[in-house]
Image 1 (cartoon, rainbow, N blue to C red):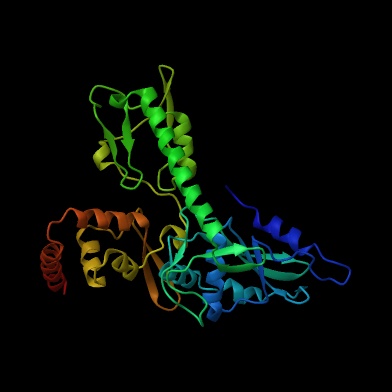
Image 2: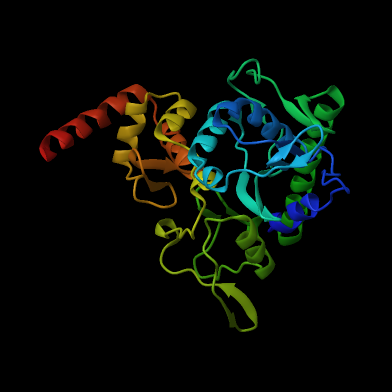
Length: 345
């Protein structure tokens, strides 16, 4: 769902008293900061994780505290914030992934920056690495209360766990009801991570998918190309070109910071391998160049940065899970890799 950040923030900024001070208080969904400083990222990240574990919300920059005065920020300086540094910090220090937006709002000739944090799809978001001057600690879970971000209490944590269990229960019940209605022998499984469709019997039959399901997938699954529907004998169908096993997954324009959150070193950490091992796997299985798995970003200082999606991580996990002896497998690939590098010189 699209969020109109400009309208919402302007409504807050225009709620002032006769002296020009902001009436709006900090709450469970908003925190005010005077300015943005990258050195304070550990403090910001505590609030970011806390908001993600509640209902999401904003960190709004350009508001001085006690009293809350609208002073604004330097537009160009905020525009030049290295978003990949924020992404890298959050990936290094929290799990699962936190989704966020960043932007500027103009009000009465002044500019105000914001970071919007989405409510986490998978809760709780947990800190996995210490940072700052006792700002965040490994193993801690932060939660946004009214006007403050602090370690989560028992009742809020229990609520998150209960909501997760209820969500899974509803999902399973929905699946079971659909399977019972259709009949187990007539059910196909669509693996959204690998893009595979598992069908017990497909030869000589048409694969027909409910148009409502396709619409739902279009909204929720970014890497699936929009289907082209045709009416054949009154039944809405999704036409599949070529064999399913080799069908390409077409990816529309994606956000480099959210949809490709991993650097090579992050993949290595997730897989428990050396960065070199990940490098040879990427080479062997042609991960680079496939937009489902990888993009290349040009930067002003370092030239180019290679970033990878969660599908790249799942692909590499799947490859490793198929091996009986991973170290032997990696040594074999390494020899081929070294041979290729020597021949290219």
